[in-house]
Amino acid sequence: MEARVKAGLWVSMALRMGDSAGTPGMVLRKGDADSGGILCVLRGREGLVVLSQTRDAAGRPAWVRGSGANPVDEAAADAYVARQVKRDPDLWVVEFEVPDLVPPFEAIII
Image (cartoon, rainbow, N blue to C red; front, side):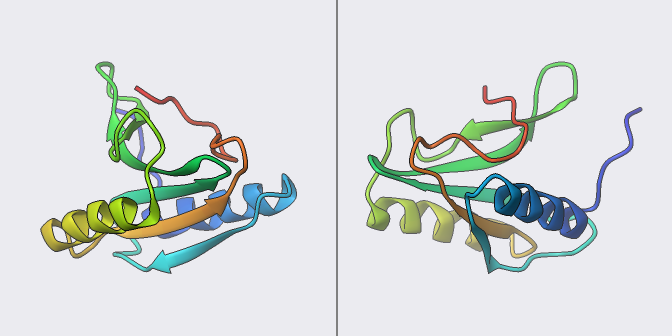
């Protein structure tokens, strides 16, 4: 079984990677530091994409476009985040300014 990285540590790592890549990020909502899930809001030229943390078929960390296949406006992204936080109060929400809507961290998007 693969060891899981604590949510707070992963968020810190992702923010540092974003800073070093010139794509600043910020924590919009702190969740459980040990086992909280993570939503990643990508803010780009075409709109916003909300990535939701998941696992692929082999159990490896992956991301799914929770807000849909295409970029959405801020109201739609905020509504999606609010629904997810209501379901999971331990959820982290981080946001990155990425013009091309590509996360600044290594991510398998399924």
